[in-house]
Image 1 (tube, helix red, strand yellow):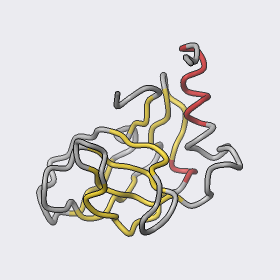
Image 2 (cartoon, one colour):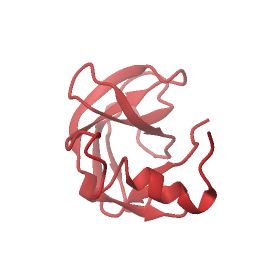
Image 3 (cartoon, helix red, strand yellow):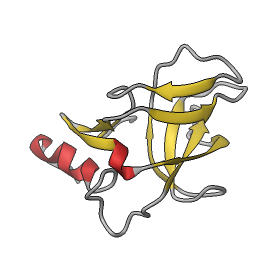
Length: 120
């Protein structure tokens, strides 16, 4: 199935954002994932749906998102999970940060983007 490009942002906003579907939990939790999409570490940090707004192709944080401490290992993705521990991935995104192991990561507004079809 493919969703037309004019609906990519709306599809993502139905998952992540203030008007998300009732099928998606109201509380999301951060996690660090490796390149295979396996959890390296849960952040213990809640991420609010209200922190996201539509952009071309998906959603991005419209406010600062505090993402917790960067763990040891090769971190490839930041994920939003449906539970604080042992949860399921709601969405995952590649990211850029100057943080190194054990640094707190903060995503300035617009820098944490969940785009339709990405990462592929």
